[in-house]
Amino acid sequence: MTSPTRSLEVDFFRGIVLLIIAVDHITGSVLSRFTLHQYAFCDSAEVFVFLGGYASAAAYTALATRRSDSAARRRFFKRSWEIYRAYLFTAFLMLIGGGLLMALKIDTPMVQYTEWPAFLARPAGLVVDIALLRQQPYLSAVLPMYSVFALAVPVIVPLAQKRPVVAVFGSLLVWLAAMPLLRFLPGTYGEAWSFNPFAWQLMFMTGVLARIQPVSGTFHAGKIARWLTAGAIALALTFAFFKLFLETQAPPGYMKQNLATLRIVSFAAIAWIVARAVYAGWVARLARRLPGIVTIGQQGLVCFIAGACVSLVLDSALRAMGVLGLGRYPSHWILGLIADGIAIASLLWLARFWADRKAAKAARAKVAERQASRLPVMKGPLPAHISNRRDR
Image 1 (cartoon, rainbow, N blue to C red):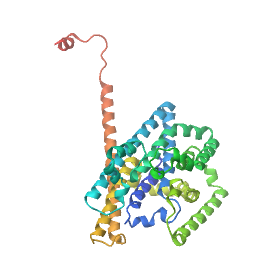
Image 2 (tube, rainbow, N blue to C red):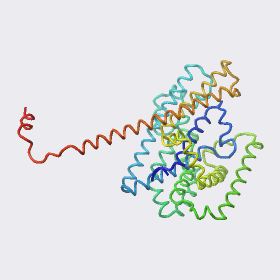
Image 3 (tube, rainbow, N blue to C red):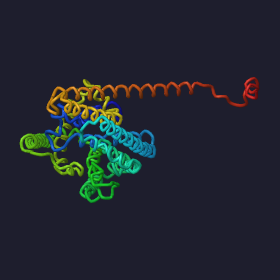
């Protein structure tokens, strides 16, 4: 643990997931052929939402303990607003990207995903729809769900602390009713919300409970934990076999949108295996050897926005190269590997730059605070020579 509110392992996994999200959205990527979605019925989305719940619970409880519950609530209301602004900014960047793709005459489905054609048809209406979450361009679509979760943190974290059983079963009931509840969300069509928050709250709540009600070291050292590990490995290998050799087409989108049971079971098996690796200390040792990835995890929101833009640019560039005969897209692995390298290097640089920028800003604030505390406090009337100067 790096601090009471931050976990080295959590930041490390968040950094890995952000890198995977970037390369997974580059259609010609080579590394995406080896990421989680190729071997399991879940992907980086489950991991990221789970970690978001874990980190949110850690931050809320630490702030509530250090200051007060009201301070923690205010911080997460502010966080929800920050995520919503990030969503608007990402949506704007997606629209700009779609406009550039159309201007450059690059034949790619990304133009449709960015909602640029809809913007040309009704610019004012689309802007209003985006602001009201009725339409969510491409990779910006995950952020409204996080904004909703941030608003819910002041309710679900105290509930998980005081009544964990109620929190578990309440979350399960909402998940079971997620598909009918989706109709009550703002949207111009059913797919407007790529992630149904009524379903995905179950993954977020699981992360919260993992932080608030952690598995004890005594349980990890027991026989039941070893049997669970053996079962999880067997289940993960079975799913990998199905994905690699038996699956003939991708699962329908609604399974991910509404967090299907199969995805939950697949994630649970992998999560338990990883939890055992964390307990053994393997993940912490690896994280210390790769501090750049930890930094990406610590700068999650800005790296997510950057990753969305980088993946859109690189995906479109690879498609353009294929059209122009510069490569046999998407099978030309050299170009795909170069794109992967650019995406990873971009996020590593941005995370380091942003972390240094925040550290410098915090240092300046401390210096200013220290200087202000050293100023003498004048009591009583001002000396005559100073008063005369002010009167002039």
